[in-house]
Amino acid sequence: MKDIAETAGVAQSTVSRILNDAPVLIRVSDETRERVRAIAEQMGYQPHPFARSLRGAPTMLLGAVVRDITDPFFAGAIEMLSLKAKAHGYSVVLGHALATADEAMALTAVLEARQCDAIVLLGDLREEPRLLDDLHSCHVPVVALWHGSEGPSLGFPTVSVDNRSGVRAALGHLTGLGHRRIAFLGPDVLGDIREREGAYRDYLVRARIPLGGRYIRHVPNTVDGAGDALCELMALPEPPTAVFAATDIIAVSVIHAAFVHDVAVPAQLSIVGFDDIPFAAATVPSLTTLKMPVERIVTAGVRFAIGRVPDSIPRLVYKPKLIVRASTAPPPHEG
Image 1 (cartoon, rainbow, N blue to C red):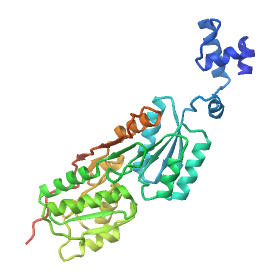
Image 2 (cartoon, one colour; image 1 turned 135 degrees about the vertical axis):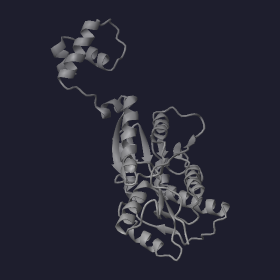
Image 3 (cartoon, rainbow, N blue to C red; image 1 turned 90 degrees about the vertical axis):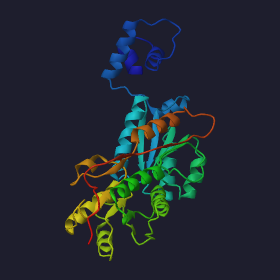
């Protein structure tokens, strides 16, 4: 600011007030304001977040702790968070939790130390009670996105997808096509995915489809994680005619494994995913899936993070939308 003041021929206090849009005691002409801003831009001036925090001003930084940065779904969520934060003048500081409490706790401490105005959690970390206790002692607001739509309140604002509604739509689509032997493939470690498995079990009970647990397989949430599970399922005396995958990544893995093992999709096996990640429409065949309301969830999360929170602790849940593509069809005729 001193260099800008010398070049512009004004006082440093005037430069500070112009660049911070603060009121001035002596009127400053529009020409002077434009000259100061132009010189500041030429010199590459940037406000320092830590210096702003010492003055009690917002740093305009949001800290984001991501459960799994390798998941394409969260890559899209991070991009949306950055866009929505930028629209309010904020930048995002990113940290990867790897779904472990120790690393997530360390990250939240770092984000606090970097004077972030709020911390946004992306991905379900409800099964880490030490992390949640640590977050409750944070000196900045905490907002949780995609922390499941069921269970007790976390004690801070949450915005999630209605997993149960999504599973009902997916299975309703498959049973409407005539499928009765529907398998479930999903991870065994992620809380929001477990909600989808529970909803799958409940739906089959209500639909009077007595499958028990023989069509359920727990697999890694990776593009090559479903191969062995699909082989096991198709080797059953009565193999499934459809698979509901808890994520699109697993659904893509099933499509690939089906191709490798000469299982025709959807003629022999229909497949439904969950998330509608960008390349879900580009698989062969294109994937029927549940479109996650990413923009609505992130928009609400950013609104809560920057302080627009009602008196009660909000807990918003948005419904996903079924997107029917080419990976589902009526089951094959038997006999």
